Image (cartoon, rainbow, N blue to C red):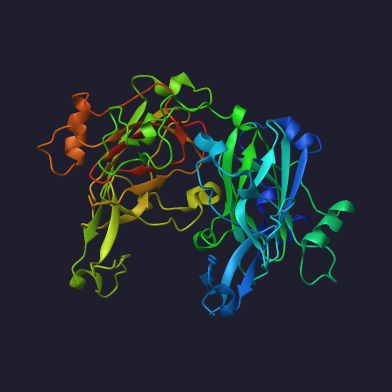
Length: 475
């Protein structure tokens, strides 16, 4: 058998012709059925979004009565991110619950910039989209830094990647919004409407473009941002508003307002109504829920405690060993464990070369390698039957004050059905054993009345979170 090796999303961004050395994300196919109208008709809205950096001179930054967010790059440049010539600033009030408390003049976009913009605009970058519109977005890399492809992530939706590439005009050294619009007018922006991989993040090739499509059927206000985290605080984000505030989920009666409550309070008291705070497990989902997911007994229940292992220095630096570790400000040498295992990436990609990986490489809490020490390092993998109803209980055994670990799941949104700490006040530190005992006694708080749908959840320190989903996305 001949094994063919591919580069995924090659740096040369040649994606419009078949090749035997690489494959682009827009040439992949979706494993799930798609809504045909997303790809078979012209979009209702086309949005072109160039992004770039402003390079500041120090005397521009440090002026009286001004505040500009910026990043100091490795070469010493002072940078601010722009999308369509706007650098994102946060709204004064949360848009889902206090939309009309915001000054309408605080919102802006490429077609509606404030009159007092100077070098660039710094405002709440928001693009309004009619509910149920077919939307096409063309992202254009005007940063053009070699070997860096900016990954853009959209909250609230999965989208189809229908185009990735660079300009076919070899006389053009640097792509721009103007040139991209001209290519589109002439039908030279490559779109593949037969392949239709479904994603929530796409890498835009340097000095190139990516084209995405989706149906705007999820009312709300959704963040769209570069996933290079240090680009977010300097403005490489925007909001996509689907529908009007009247289309948004209704604000519950008595819902706390900005400044009067804390979301996910550090005390993790989430099983009683309170006036000073609200936990994510107390929120309600705006969309229709698959009640099958919320049946009393899931098909699979997984308990996942997580903690740190603290190395002694003599354990780390031994011949012929390699241990991953972190040195935090306190000087300790740490490794992370989930169910007593520290994850190691497989030597080959599992979706395309699963059988090339030695089965002994895989492990989980019930199947640890016999030679594991206190820092068991292997490819931590838990097998789940297709279409099973899954419940996961995350248990914080790190127990560091004021630190809640946010866990993110790829490929699914899940319902947060429980959150809190042990009701046994004699227990100072929660453990897997204690959480199992609480569950046996029915003392792990769960609420099944319209629990919210999330893809990331913060586990309260010295506490737990319970999430549910249907495993209907093979991968």
